[in-house]
Image (cartoon, rainbow, N blue to C red; front, side, top):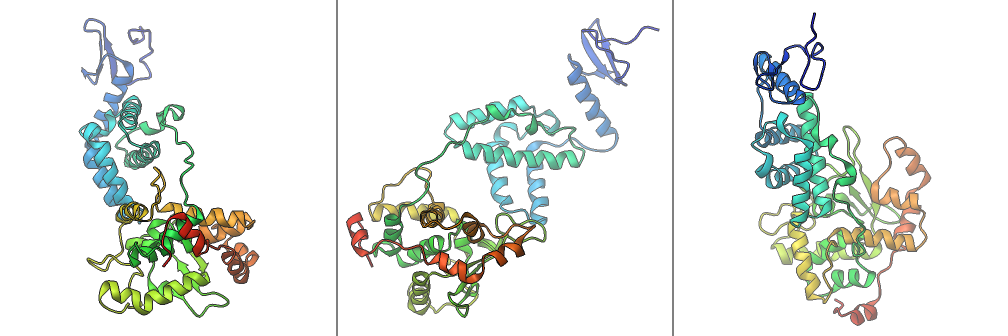
Length: 381
């Protein structure tokens, strides 16, 4: 009995449903056109098998929306942001393709085009990570047989380099927190980002109820959600990456003044406990990180700070971490304050670093005095 062979001697005996037509020089799948390569024929067979089971082929663009809806129900952080980025950068090129038709080489070529077109390497990699999760879900639902994103060569992806301008210097922080040319509500928000080493979403999500003024020796700011009450970065399932952050005396004085008179001067009424500390004046909801970043660029100009590409609101957090490092604070102590306890040993972490020790650490951070800020170019409030 003659074995079934392909054009290059491939053994087709282990490939049910696939045959080769030497006259037309193409493969057949279940008697229908299956392409000119064995790989294409196998893909066609898998597609036909799925259709026979009632699994309809889906296009990438619409499936991204389905993925967003599913992940939103499961509480995935920033899923709307991820989906918008995919619809903006990936869908226009590949959105009309069926999930099974997307090839790793196409993805790599698209990533290169986006990068050469001006998109940052970090943004391109974020897109790749999001798309990897989309195909991971599609594979789970048996819509695809493999994840093409995982076949993209890592060493050929745009590389993220170090950015020397990703933090503010102490004098720059002092100017942004104290200069009267900056509106008071913005100064308060920048102070929240700095004094609590907060990510931008965390700073926008602070409410007055998060601040416990009765704690000793310093008050306590609880960081357990971010803007729009989304979970913190690092939160997973039943683990919440909550942090308890001592309130520096300068931050306490700022918050007291803001609650007593500053809030009402901007928003027209005294603050309620459930209010965001620095809400959006239009709707009293949390400010959006993107809007905060745009305002920060404007305020840098107001106090003669050169805007440096890649330095955003995260620069306040990195400035605080750098200042504690300069003060010789132990790395683990800084990690507890800025990233929370690890899931596996959170109790051990808080036993090792008692509240009094964390309070002492926070008070090591001191901003430049008035004379230094004026010399820098600002006008101290």
